[in-house]
Amino acid sequence: MGKDIGGVIGATREAAAGAVATDAPRVDRDRAFPAESLRALADAGALGLIVPEEHGGVGGGLGSLAEACESVGAACASTGMVFLMHEVTAATVAIGGGPAAAELLPRMAAGTAVGTLAFSERGTGAHFYNPELKAVHKDGEVTISGRKSFVTSGGHADVYLVLVQGEAEGTADAYLVSRDDPGVRFDGAWDGLGMAGNSSIALELADVHAGDAARIGAAGKATELVFGVVAPFFLVGLAAVNVGIAAAAARAATEHAAGRRYPDGSSLAEIQHVQHLIADMDLATRQARLVVREAAALGDAGDESALVVIMEAKVAATEAAAFVTQKALEATGGQGYTPSLPVERHLRDARAGAVMAPTNAVLRNWIGKALAGLPVP
Image (tube, rainbow, N blue to C red):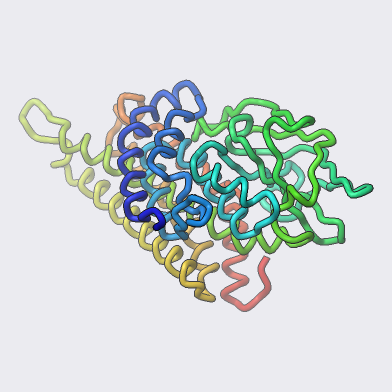
């Protein structure tokens, strides 16, 4: 019998509210990779959430991912991104298949192999699905050389799914590369405004040997995996992480307002403007959550309208997170501007979502095209 999805999601919530939330201030302050939080999630069974049951996982879908990512994102956005990229990689490996999949997936489910994507390049920007990196095919061997940017968990993940141009023009392939493979190195340090612990750094590959055994999916078919698997799982998960950020900021601000007392005994929450801020935060968070849950449900059902709603979910949730965290700062004033409250951390973390590829501007183009019956992208 497979693991109970509800039980794993419940255990994930407990781990997020406990170990992950406890370590979040240190992860942010020290810009530390959240290794301890990841172990707590592995112990909860969360790292196998998307891995099929036959490979030791839970066999969850987009709905399960949304619930888990919201909980983890609320506790620590850095951990949320690391967790999300592992889950997206697991989904891609499971659905794409290949000789390496059966051996890797049980290790991903157990948390002994943490995975991530290496798709972005400086030259492609938001159009990460169209890589410039080429794999050299010669005498039955495949070697990869080049540089990938903004690789979440860079230097810490065990396996990296690298997107490269395929042999045929206009195609793409995805290969698994291990952290310890000869020719693999990492460059730089993550010094972004927020999500300080996600180690989003550059991956450099110098004649790294791959091959058919390391390829995920059929030759030349990686673009289909990008839009059919990576995009929905990443966009729903990222949206959910941002709903979590918004919910956490709203909760922190509301609790502060209710508990902040003046000499006459009245609370900050009794001021009408603060009440409006509290209401606006709650409304925006709930609205975003509903869009994300609808997107996940449509995706799991295979509804033909799912992709548009999934794209809209990312836009709605990331913009809600930016809106709510700003309102939370206004509600908490000077205290919110300091680390004495988590509001300033949530505010910084919420600024990343809109510019993560595909950016909200690109998604608006695609949404408009899709709704008008034009080809996407």
